[in-house]
Length: 186
Image (cartoon, rainbow, N blue to C red; front, side):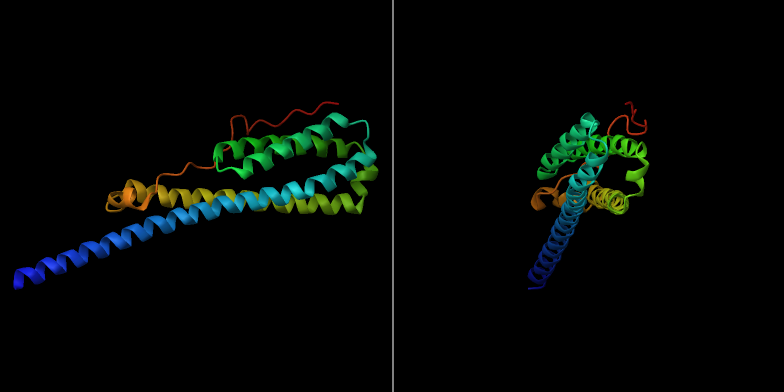
């Protein structure tokens, strides 16, 4: 009788540890998915601001067609990448869009009337705020991915990875050449 109670107690403890491990891994994975979604939300917000900014600049700089087309093309790439779950593709598309926005702002610098336009200034302020939120969302995702990756790689959680269907997540790394400022030529 005593042996049966000990066996039952051990089984209950093992099942409890299994449930806790499963839940901890799944909760961390969902947190990382949510954080990645936060990046997509901010990229979408930026993409929604860009057509207004392009139209405002277009009125002042009609001959800068190449820059405006580049921004539009990069924006489409970000939308396509954000629809998937490939972190590296999203980061690369995001970097391309950031570079084209730098060139767009350089075009705006050449037009003093545009720099004083209230609509343009408000759009730039919103875009700057969104860029800050994107940076925060990236950091938040990387923190969530790091938490999950630590759990996946350490005992006792490592024992429950297969059961929970969880694996390591890639970090949102800046693409190659991100530290080099884009060149702007007219």
